[in-house]
Image 1 (cartoon, one colour):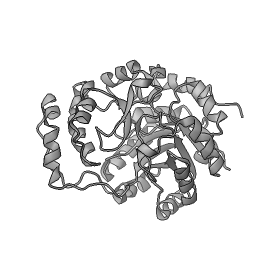
Image 2: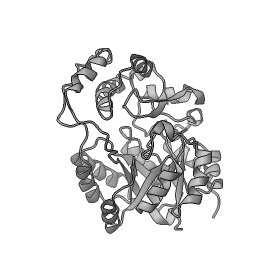
Image 3: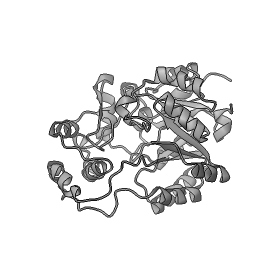
Image 4: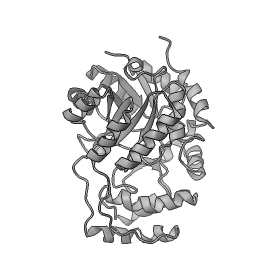
Length: 347
């Protein structure tokens, strides 16, 4: 089995979790510059925006970084007549931020082909994927361009499928983690395995490096990941709360005041199961019983969530965070990284 550090060209096996919609160039670059693997989530980015982001990352760091994409599961809905019905159900939230109900767009998401075409031009050191096994053609093209491919698993069966599909490394993400549960073989609700039982079983089942994710926020979590057999640790919430992150003050404050047992798994904000704080919006949407399928729900709530973010209205945002949120005590990415790297065992 190849060593993760040698595989992706990094000094320390600390990986920044990719935040779809909340990534920032400064945070990605800070983690890469510190010797880890900075990651940037490209959810919803079209080709032009990917090229712009790639140029910004290249200008900010000469070190390896990862770009992350969501693979289509096949159940995604396209704009249709139901758009207006589900938009109307969310009208109070648009009124709360002073926005009109959005008209139906031509598409909710750019195509995977458009994203990949731009990613090949950017040529990151790593392409990480969630929600599935990348195609043989994708992996072959990535390897032809010298790009390492990392898959993401929430169960042992998913990890085996990824390994058999030819990925170079696997993120084993426990149910403690922030944001979307990226399950793809079974429903996310049926794939909720914690980090501690998941990681060693994945390590035993595959022959590629495993990166542990979920509930890791300090040196103790990193040390535990390696004790479980992982070759790296992916960290999200602890970095999300730092100054370099793209989140606003309301989100940072929510991370610091939300107890481990106060985060919830909900489909309210996006139509797919994700972990975050149960704020006013989550409670109201869940109580309404009206949640549009993905990506329609995510696109609609994204319109008022963006306005709420600009107005620092935490009760109207997606406050993504994991169960280790109370351990996210770092002001800067450098402070977080310095703590995390102390948990890496000596070689």
